Length: 302
Image 1 (cartoon, one colour):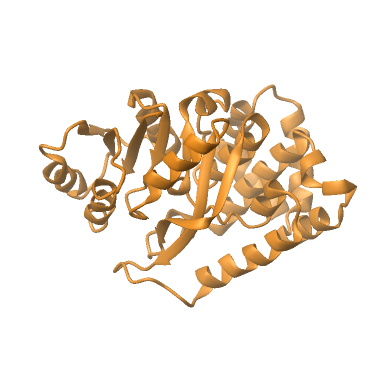
Image 2: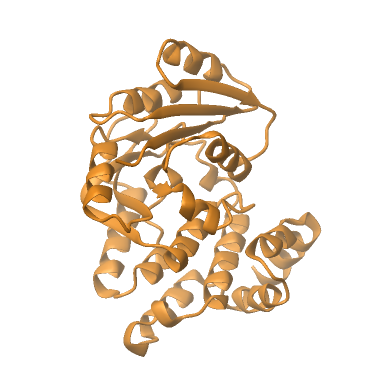
């Protein structure tokens, strides 16, 4: 059976890290190792993690200067020894049977490279949400998916995988995809899109895999204009890579509906032209990370 490493990037989530770690430690099928990297937090989250993991076999806490989500994830995966990687963001919670479910799917379908599943929504106190904007968003995503024959197009429309915490993937796929890219908000969506091109992705809708925590400090709530820019950049990359699997049976209607709903088609056109001028996704994403260019794109096109 392939080994699974749980990797946890921690940044200023002292209020949530104990619940996250507890969910990893209480798995019905235990992780082969747990590695946490504190990315230069200003709170005492790392100290809380060290206390909880003291004496836990094959568990460790590493501290570093702040490097950002993508760089921290890539470092964690480099350090980890597992054949498969299960990411757990420090404000999310694993379902108790998540790793057992993933092991079962891998055992039955050896060709699987990435697994994600249904998510539940919890608030900052850990209370499950049954109404609200995030629950409504999941309902919209499910409705579009029911009409859509393309998993990639469905996720580009609404990324209801939601977070890297919902991903268990092979180390080999991570290498093939070039690791996580330098995006603050959409490195998860970019990784998913690239995984579909290079491996077998299993969307497990039969089981809830995680509880995604919605709280005032969620990164996704920072700057809507930068989020829209990164979404447009990922869409430009996806279109650059081809649209065959985005348009089942050559039906462009749902693709057009998705692009219209994002209201960034003009920006995607510019970004697609920029993507065509560079060799790699990383070089493209690094170019739009330049603050001057980024602000000019936002001012002119958003």
